Image 1 (cartoon, rainbow, N blue to C red):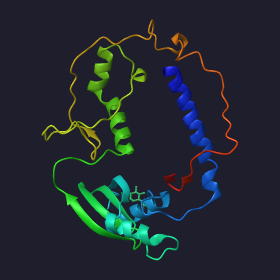
Image 2 (image 1 turned 90 degrees about the vertical axis):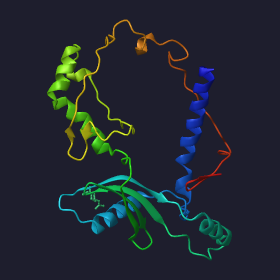
Image 3 (image 1 turned 60 degrees about the vertical axis):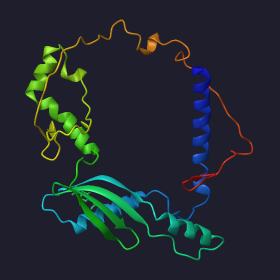
Image 4 (image 1 turned 120 degrees about the vertical axis):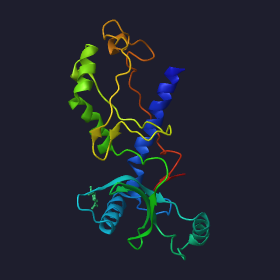
Amino acid sequence: MAHSLKIFCCFFFFFLFSTLSIIPLSHQLEQHPLDSLTPNEFIRVQAIVNQSHPTTINDITFQYIGLNEPDKQALISWLQNHRPTPITAPPPRQAFVIARINHQTHELVVDLSYDNIVSDHIHHGFGYPLFTFQEQNGASQLVFNHAPFLAALNKRGLKVEEVICETFALGWFGETKQNVDLEAMKITHFRDRLVVPVPKAAGTDYRESEQKAPFGPELKGITVVQPDGPSFIIDGSRVR
Ligand SMILES: *[C@@H]1O[C@H](CO)[C@@H](O)[C@H](O)[C@H]1NC(C)=O
């Protein structure tokens, strides 16, 4: 079962990559209103929000930027009138943004046709926006300079270079306290809960040299030929 799954996966990715590399080059398609934002649009959205919210200390972080999907009815009528020649203009292209600006969570809609902010709502309710990569990395590194954490490693007989830290959201338990203040990038609370035996590397079967079929040894190479090309078409962001 696992064996055939592995082969299936090989086939699948082979088809995917062999097709992806050929088709997008052959024809440039016009943008569909549901196409995700382009890298250039991401930068424009940031620039528009930055300009409209000048801060003295670069105090804006973007937690989320994505397409604000057009109104379904507007989309349907555009699709119906669109072919064979475009008669109606596409629905407005907008981005939905969650940003922390001066310690407040903003939910913004940015219009990319007019380069302006359509709505700007400050979130006062429960919950926090997603972590950014910078926040996750920053918080994970912070503990390595925290003496009680280093003492806790020592107590378990671990070296700093044997440990990695990851940043996870606490979830919402109705608590008002947080353990790391990401805006100040400070540890506000440390709790060393329990000591459990740490497994040693020796004698475990996780090593590559211990792997047996179907997880090892490696499968022999395989070649797939499609003389008439694949049976599907990738059309911009659409797969037909
Ligand atoms: C917007 O401001 C943020 C925070 O200062 C900065 O990291 C980002 O590069 C700026 N983006 C643009 C496109 O100006």
